[in-house]
Amino acid sequence: TTQNYAQFKNALIASNCDRCELHKGRTHIVVDRGNPEARLMLIGEGPGENEDKQGKAFVGRAGQLMDELFLEIGLDTNRDTLIANVVKCRPPENRAPHQEEAKTCIVFLKHQIALVKPKVILLLGATALKHLVPAKTKFSMSDEAGKFFTVSEFPETLLMVLYHPAYLLYDARKITPMREHLLRLHD
Ligand code: URA
Image (cartoon, rainbow, N blue to C red; front, side, top):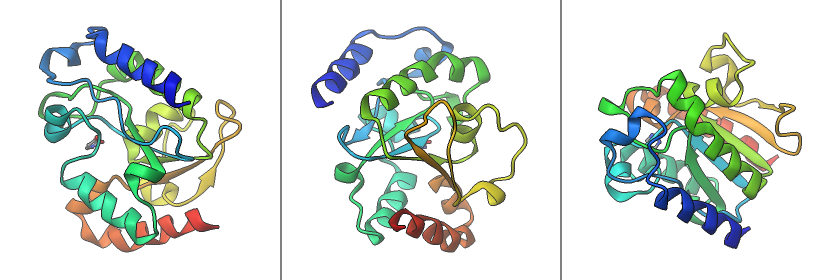
């Protein structure tokens, strides 16, 4: 995995991709953070300002909170997870990626999933759910969060939706259910 994954990552960065509009505002193509040998993959929405500056996923305030919550259940996100996003370039003002941007970029995410072959994928927030599982059209995050499910596209992988850590910063009352959802990873 490591070698193929590193090749994929280096090639994507070197490509200077301009397949969608998001390339215009970026500093770095943000491919991931963490360990491509991990059995757990976390998928967010797209880079924010800190991620764009540093070229790594989830290194801002949301990422710090996420790291703390995973550490509580004994997981080091850099060692035990690979973190990626639906889009790899920062959207202006951190808006959600447009449908065509997500559609263009998700081929790279799917390549990452194919290389990593995670046991479990955690979809962080509605954007990740919407684009990874397009068959789910109408959903509410409070109904979806915390439940394992499978999809035919990734037959070997269990999926779970979680609240996006940036949402937890905005509504701290969701941290308690988030902790309960994370504990299900131990079953
Ligand atoms: N929010 C995301 O969805 N992804 C990041 O990498 C950082 C913040």
